[in-house]
Amino acid sequence: MLPILRPFRRAKKSPDERLHEVGGRTLPLRIVEHERAKRLTLRIEIGGKGLRVTVPPGMPGRDVDDFLDRNRAWLESRLAKFPDQPKVRPGIKIPLRGVPHLVRHEPGRRGTVSIADGPDGPELIVHGDPQHLQRRVADFLKREAKRDIEPLVAKHTAGLSKKARAVRYRDTSSRWGSCSSEGNLSFSWRIMMAPPAVINYLVAHEAAHLEQMNHGPAFWKLCKTLCPDTDRCKAWLKRNGSALQAIDFQP
Image (cartoon, rainbow, N blue to C red):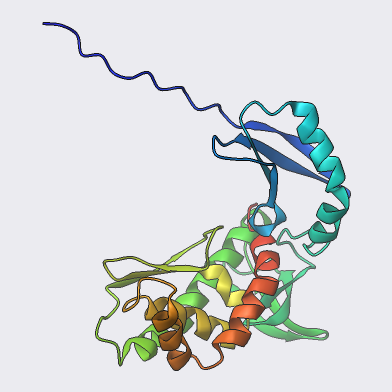
């Protein structure tokens, strides 16, 4: 029996990864070749945590360096909008439902997070070992997300022909929410740092996808019926979402 000959496929080149210094920061930089790219494009990753340059095949490295130098001022102005030290730790403030809360560590009680009125405004009191502080704050936001979002899902789907099968919570870097064709809704628990009106909009947005799995006119009409404040909340999330995504909850 003759062997079956398969067409030869050229292996995709692995991305070139290195560090790039700009605006007083050192960020991971990925240089990715794309066979259909006609020019260089530069993208700041969600949360300002890295950079990505897409280049045509065979682009010399010096051309990429020149491209980055030409766009240095643009990069610095955009990166200036992200927090300089966004890691969750005692002494910084993170928003809860749009209101800044001071993070304070008190080791006395075991692994709980509570809200208190401090001398300079509301505080998040984190108990337990300090090495678990970031995880405990993240877990607290997940619990608060479940408390707020599930009643909103029930509210916004009450008049729809299709109901949500499940509601899930994740830490997604590319989107705030999603709706699967099976009717499963997913939300980033980071949305709990946004104002209540924006949280409500996000739930209405994903609920509308249960009937309209697109972003066409019928979808936006339904979304605005569920949430009349859609335009303002959508603009708020576009303007402020990257800063929320930049907050680092890793130990």
